[in-house]
Amino acid sequence: MGLYEVCTGIFIPIISIFYKIEVVGKENVPVDEPLIFASNHKNNLDPMLIGSFMPRKVSYMAKKELFKNKIVGYFLKNINVFPVDRSKTDISTIKTALKILKSNGALGIFPEGTRIKQENLGKAKAGTSMLSIRGKARVCPVSIIATYKLFSKITIYIDKPISFESYYGEKLNSKDYENLSQQVLDIISKNISKYSG
Image (cartoon, rainbow, N blue to C red; front, side, top):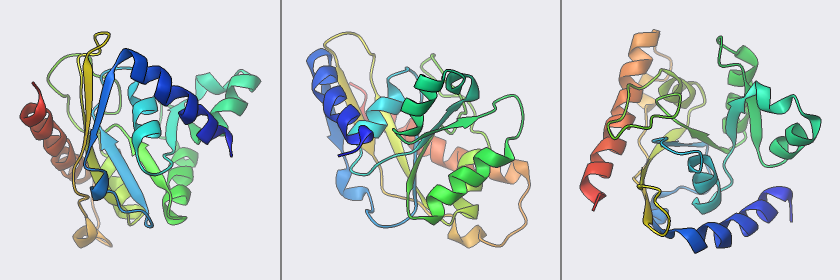
């Protein structure tokens, strides 16, 4: 058993004390192909929720500053977290993400690129569809429906995976990728509205 399994084994019973967790749509997750879990991001718990409650191991990127401490960096690397420089386009991060996908791994992404605290979602960045197309991976839209008030319910709704296969080999610019990523975010937003309350 690796550190990833140990951490999820500790996190799930602890988080379940403070919140009622409901996961809907696990049957929609393909188990043996490259996959991107794309979700909304309102709270710092979101990556841990996705990493713990998806039926697959999930790799995430995190700001490089967190890796400056060697102990923290070692811990993060062993729970499938890798660094990203958010101040510029980080080619090494893209290569790492694509390597994960090309080895049939699962990647966790926030299409908005950052945490959005307000109720309405922000605009999608290019990264979700770009990695999906370059990594030839389908995208599972995941809607986290929560107020994060103690002892409230958190619903994690996993929609059926969508494919951008028709765009493989096409020459796309940043705006094209943003528009395709927005399609994923729109599904997430629709499901939040549908299953809230």
